[in-house]
Image (cartoon, rainbow, N blue to C red; front, side, top):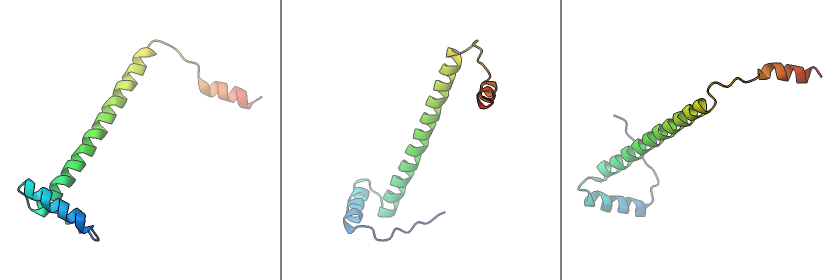
Length: 83
């Protein structure tokens, strides 16, 4: 298990965390742990949502341009460079 030491925490913040912990029936350590776990989970969900949205946009683009043929841009670039 990893331990984290937080130095120079504003005493007002610590007091607010203690009050919050009391409201949830937890120790200060358990409250801070719950807050950190919730933040990490929210980040994971946000990232998954972002990836799902990206996949959806990619699929929409594929469907939009399905069946079309496109010129080879490499050949066009070579022609332009040779001028």
